[in-house]
Image (tube, rainbow, N blue to C red; front, top):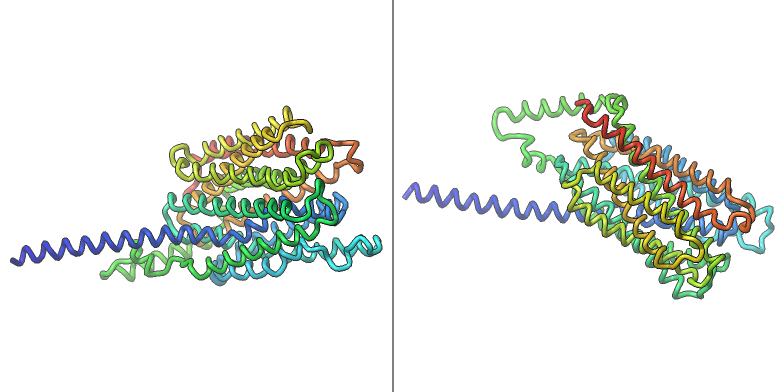
Length: 482
């Protein structure tokens, strides 16, 4: 009788444990999905910033190309300077969620105003006043917006190592984060397409279309505010109880010793960020991320400008191409991100990056050889599909490589991510200014200028990514243990 009771007790305990594990598993799945909400507002802003900021400044506000490029460079420089500062401070003071909330509030207060015509910037105002007032007004908004954007980006990335120590779950979180980014960008292009079609239709975008950009920015700001509010209400970081349940402490006489050893290791490791800085692999990983982001950013900036340039020669398609082609690009990104999420363990992060780089290079060659002003719209959509596939695969795989580099050092996650993402802000801004500086003053002098940009600038980014990958792969086996 006693043995039967013991057997029933063990069976009941086992069932309870299985049920608790099942509930815990579903809780974590839900938390992983909720994690994706935390960067949606940033992604909405980034899609609008890179795709339509230059178009808004040049076509709507009639700002000179060099000045518009300088505005983008200013934003990238501020973002680059804010990134390491935020990384260091977020690891030392406060929680990642508090930093995230602060950045989200700053973005909310500044981003919608970037796509609203400033007071005193109308065409009736004297050109002398507009020449200094317009750049000053938008420059001040860009400074605060980029600081807030950097705070949100770094704090959200740094949550990944804090959420779990499992490399597979970290890869899943990175993929979920990028899928949320793609979904956000899809929303931006879909909303833009609807606004352009629903409002007063025009073949070209000009100064009278300012209210369209205002409406789009207000709509996506509303979506972004709702997303980060849901994130802060629903998302829970790991607590000490979760760490205990994962085996970091035991209920016996050695419990206090284990905690003491764990804390001492944590303090020693935290003071050794210099070891990361001495690793060549850190800088090689940064280059992988830089070139994947450069390809992505230049594609976002110059695909709409290329389409607007093409409309001057072949206006039959209309201005909605400015929204529909990026929409196809991001649908492709979303599909390949889903595919990569399930297949990345089979091919590996480095092989995935190589495949993505080759797809990116093929899209650039296609533009150079076949996409002339008379090319069919179907060809343009196919090239957009390749651009989306290449950018999504290289970005996700480069972030997965970064998460693998951090390993168990989650308390240094914000600092490492800030180092990895620092250079891409500066490189992108400098590249845009250089491209705009060499643009002809008269359109007739270089009617296919932006086609060349997509061919050589984006193609060069893909080639440099492949070269960096070869050096990173050679060094990976020599990665030091910290």
